[in-house]
Every structure is written in structure tokens, then in C-alpha cells.
Length: 115
Length: 280
Image (cartoon, rainbow over all chains, first blue to last red; front, side, top):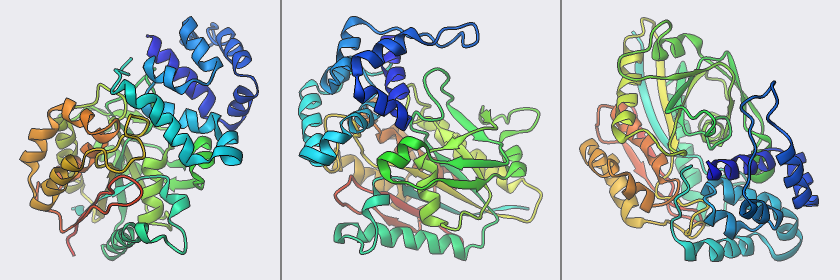
């Protein structure tokens, strides 16, 4: 169930430009707002639960930790690209982001990401 | 009666959209040439409709409700998503649907014996559908029947189900009592590890790529089934390698015969599959 929520949060951020901007502006606040939403009688299947470790990883934009927590690799890479866009377009460059991502996930090998 | 006139497999790598522009970089020239070859074949076959098999990348479909196979019965489809425009520089597209053909393939009041489809009448297509269409039919003027085959959210259907899908699409077209020429366009990957430990470092598994090319070149459907039945083998070849199964569906649709054109160029990206079965 938990990896499912990690993937669900990633999609809640990454699918839209506005949500990426809101998340990047203040990740911990975005996590808090997201957890407070959902789950109404009008949307009965919109549950939102993240463990402390998952909340911390999202608060820190820690892609290595999210990989370990079972994030879907395809979603995680594009989330990483989206939430570090400012840094790599104006700073260290896209290829360096790839290198940092690979350095974080490669030592972990294949992690079971099936929720 | 309708005819399955052509089948093609292409990559749908969305990073090509920004990278493969004039002047085309040297390492991408073979990919541009292969897309042109398939674009010319699609034109030469004077098709009336396209069945497009692809794998949605957790955009339209997600783990809250993940179908094994979903078929589009909409009158029209919007193409690509805000995050794909942002990330890949893609362009929004509008594509017409082919309701009558979709009904033939899906069954109207009862599902066909061969395969159980989820049905979608509201579907925003992602790059797995839009990129191949924009490269092989930039006019976007052929009505389509999109079929999502889940090769991105385990558990994925077994390779035998992809074979059943291809065979069913062929049979449904051939039993369609109209004079129409239909093409089958599928997209997928060779070994590919987006987001995994070997992301963006060339092909993660050249050995798989070589075997997967040979199955198409030699018309070796049994070989494809034998190896791809081991899902751990696919996973070991990369996080998204199971999207190769869409190519197996095309091979099955063409009765397992050898592809008429096979090319798998290497580039800065992982290996790109181009397979074409033609009748002209």
C-alpha cells in the first residue's frame, strides 16, 4: 500500500505545471496540504497516507530515498527531472542530474517497486 | 472484407522530439531515416484506419484502476499531457477515433472470446501513441483505434496475452465486412531502464536487444514467447523493457512471419526498434 501512495503523491505533483511549482516552492508545506486533502464523501476513494520516512523524503526531494521506498522508476525519474528543473537548467545541467540520480539509485540495484 | 495491410513497430522515445530537429544530429540520422521509411510505407499503403497499440505511462491509467488491455471507443482523442509538453517539448494533438472498427475489435454487446478489453470513451493519449503518430503520419488524418497494453504497471499480461491480442486484432479486421485497408502501428522499447540503475547509459542489455531483433528478422514468434515468458528476464533487461511485448503483438498479428524491414539503430538513447511488415 505504501509504495502506491508514494506513486500517487508523485503523480499529484508531476502531472501539472502548477503543482510542480507549488511543490518546489515549499516541499514540506505541499506534503502537509496534500495529506490534508482527499477523502471526502464526494471522492471516497481518494485516501492519502504517507509514512514519516516517505514524508521526509518528499520534504527533502530525496530521490535516492524515494527509490529505496519503492517509487515506480519511470515516475520517479520524471518527478526528479521536474522538481530539479530550476537547478539543472540554470545550474549544473541535465546530464549532471542524470549522473546524480544514477549515483543515488545504482548502489541499490533493482528495488521491488510493485505496490 | 477489410485487410490488415501493414504493421509497424517504432520507438516512442519522447526525447527525440527536441533532439531530432534540423539539422538532425549525426547519431540520430538513422532514426530519422527509419521513421521516414515507415512514414512512406504508411502513405504508400493508402490506409483507411490505424489500430495503435501502445503502453500508457501511468498518465491515463494508474494503480487505482489498471487495465490489462484498454481499447478506445471515443469519437476523438486529445493527445499528450501537460507534463509531457513541459518535459519533452511535445505538441498537443487532436486525433479522430474510428468507432466502427473499435466496436469490431472490442465487441459491441459482448467481449470477444480471445481477449477481455476495458473500454474507454474518454482518454488523453500519452507519448506512446502521439509520438509514433506524429512521426509516421504527421497529418494526423487517419482515424485510429488506440489500445493500451499494460506493460508499465506490474502485473503485466503474459507474452501469450500479447500474442492473443495481435492475433485477435488481425482476425477482427479480416472479419470486418467493409472494404477498408487497416494498418497496425505499435510502439515500444528494446532494453530500456528509465529511472532504474542504468538509466540513460545506452542499452542496459545488448544481449536482449540482439535476441529481440532476431525474433523479428527471422519471424521467430516461438523464440520470442519462450524468452519473454520469463518476466524476470524482461525486468533484468530494464525497468521498461516489457514494452517490447507490443512488438510481439505485431509479430503475432502478422502471423509470425519475418518482418520485411528491421533496423535497431544505436544512438545517445537506448536502442530504437523499427520493424515493418508490408503488403506492397
